[in-house]
Length: 216
Image (cartoon, rainbow, N blue to C red; front, side):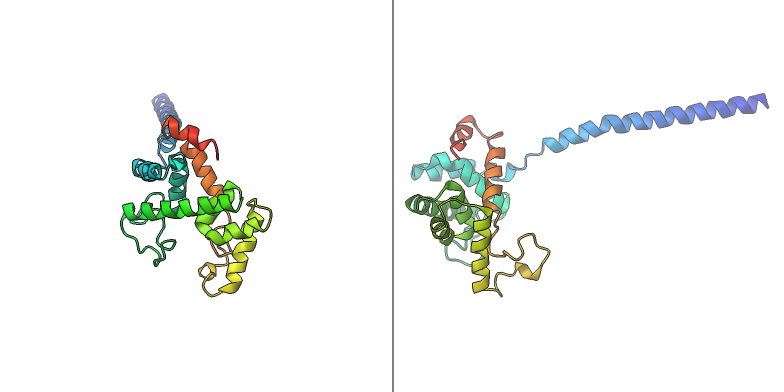
């Protein structure tokens, strides 16, 4: 009987230590997983295009906007696909008609240069220009007539105007659960998202890009 009790105690102690070891392994493993997750660079896809973007912008004396164009690309595609700047429509083509990243960047920068120049001419703020990359130059005119400063409310009102003109086209694919619904023309939160991308990028890009991004 005593031997049975000793064996039982030994088995219980063994189980206790086994559980303790498993729990310890789990606790030690969690920080490692967190570190691995934190080290994943969300901007890896766009950073590979940074030299090309900076070179093209330098030709137009706009190199200080390199982090902005990278942030636009991040919002458009995360640097993926043949049209990472999603510039096909601004170039007068069908969506995703552009299949070469170089062509996409050329057209995207051309579009950005246009809205930047037009935005300055119309005396709107920079967030309006960022939003216009998504909503077009018409948004610049709309903001210019309403104080010159971008706001989510103005973006929603402009979007709704476009929806009312073409309700069958701008309907969020019929998905009423889409966060944009019923403001289905463009993304009314686009400017804020791009600004956040710029802030995030400045923590991981070269110092000269970080310093140039501070003006935004």
